Image (cartoon, rainbow, N blue to C red; front, side, top):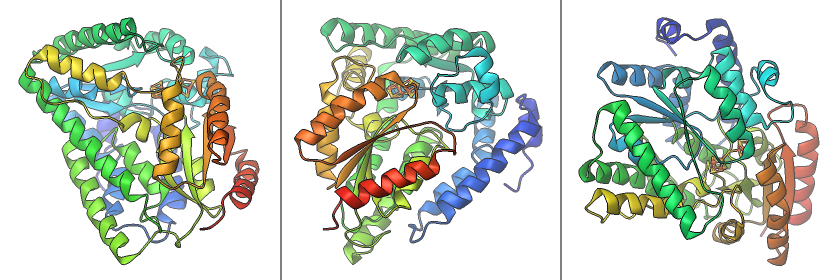
Length: 428
Ligand code: BJ8
């Protein structure tokens, strides 16, 4: 960053010392994890730029938009429909945090055995180091896992503009009705916040914007089926992570440019790793920036990641919203229809997720699946067993990994991942 953003950060109420420390760690980690990779597509330069300005230029864009009367809405879950936020001419930003920062403070309010993702956003808030939280006019929580649901009750005390949306836990007709009523309630809340009435024209525009972003991400995902793989799993993960922060039009255009380049690579038989490198699908909890620990271990252990069954990945982007409706009600139904299919582990039963994992493993020609769960995340830790059984039944090798945001288990994880790759994935 060349511009001095300190006055902006001070105005947002950030703790500059803590924020400097966080940016320092983030910069070093990015250097060692991302910039050290070989054969990266040239188009990743855009992502490098976005990351170098993630607390700078993007925040300035948000602040400039706010100065013209627009609002910023921060979210923690892919159940919160960006379509509605955009239809209200607001800006949506993902708030999930992926760094072990401020955990000591978080643990004064939360039990130690809370998942790292929750402790991280508490740590960021308590230490005032996240400009996205501080720039948000409204923050949306949801009743997904028990950890988040109960943590939001405490979070509300330090973040008064928190709004909580109810998310069903089953997939019956009454659950779909609940989701629709919650989306209608959210629509009213957004209208109150922005002073804009969400009509069918605005809603259609919001739907098209988000669908286009999804289509670009599907295009990217499909290209990873090639052998050799044209882009690393780390870079593909970063693209999926940045989707939550960036301007949707600019992001979509940049991803499509990267896809053009990847198509050329495939035509020329060029890959980021040699042909026949063992291929792995990662499945499980979402990975927020800068949680790159496991992907980095996998891709420095002789394998390439070819897909993510994750909310920062294909669980979050699968299925488009039907765009043909002409009334607010029809379009809201179409939104509900799409989001109701999300197969997060908070649902019971959750057979659809098992099918999705098998489909992705086949589609991307994965030699094995690494199931990733954050420690103390009951939904994903418990669902790891049925996932494992479903994959074994299909003859797909799998391993369960449970970890957190600390760096202490890197050596142990690397040993397990290397053994898995050596034993279960045979180069084709
Ligand atoms: S739709 S995965 S984004 S809830 S890791 S906080 S589940 S204890 S993040 Fe998620 Fe929405 Fe589901 Fe996706 Fe709880 Fe687990 Fe922590 Fe988690």
